[in-house]
Length: 115
Length: 110
Image 1 (cartoon, helix red, strand yellow):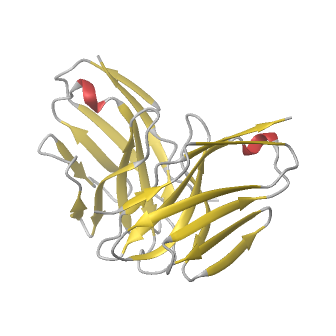
Image 2: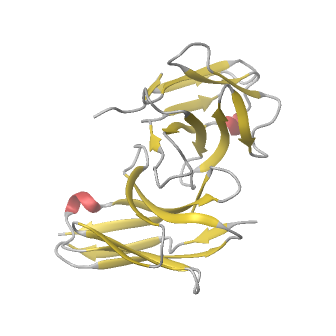
């Protein structure tokens, strides 16, 4: 069964450093998402991406965040200058067509720890 | 804004039936979904209600009542492996983002 994959599984970084989180969505999916989950809290939407552009972003997704689909398979989330409060689990998700009942499929996540 | 409220924790014993409720305040959405998340794991899709009523998928059933702004997930014949967090979520009608509920931690005891 096809699945969303993410790398790395864990990332430790110093405050102020840049990090890039990588995702490979399911191959025939067209809609891509990033979510984050601070430890013990609910999953929060960050950004959605379709047709090579951002379709929506939340208030969390400020100028320090960016997304890119550099080739036909990868979907990345970059945090330019990490802050302590960016420590969280970051989930990538993809779906074929959100206008149908198609669900979003989540990757295993990247646990980011900012020191 | 949109918000979905769930009880923070539910406990039950193996073999029992448990219901996890979700009440919401949202202006428009396509349907109510339920996700399971084990500690350290990713949310895994369980069930989806596009229309009012009951949807059954094996041991899990989900219910939606739009008029009452309420839904629930029913887990039957509980097993130890069902111990996890459960989130309700709606897909916003104006966008395609998922808005998650506060989550319910289910602990199943032998």
